[in-house]
Length: 201
Image (cartoon, rainbow, N blue to C red):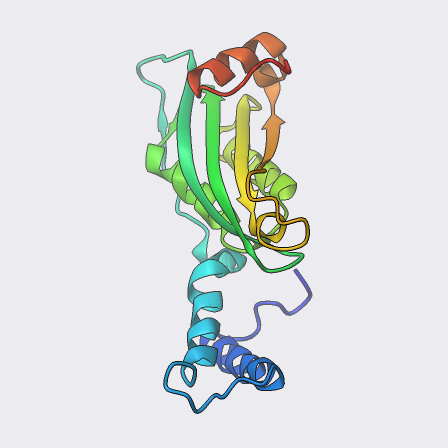
């Protein structure tokens, strides 16, 4: 993030984005007096700040609860098929897919919904999928105080699916493996749990 990125209030950001998006649509030749378009610059501005780019604000970092692993659960814990709605920072087009997150407890466990919230927080910003995958893992390592964390993201990029090469069938898979998950046999076990192809292992 640039210096001073958080100096403006959300409302001021919305006002400025509305003004600039109005100019973009005007330049494209759109009639902004039309009933269906006259509110579009404001709607887009609010959507950017309050919704799809909300993860840019450190004020929206999820509050994460961790607990003692009082049951001494020592196997991997997996939260799979977590929805991912993000935005490619190159073309500002959607990235849509799923994340699969796993960890092995080091005497600490995390509230399950908090994993989903962490994924959502890092997805809600202009992103590169490789970076997002690593950010999710690093955030969980910090809270769980263990290196034994893994994340796999499988997502469609509309900048590939709907423009340029226009390949509607392709998706992008990224992964980040920490600690015990660097072992190929542990990766295979994880892939089996999430029904992920393992022929490349």
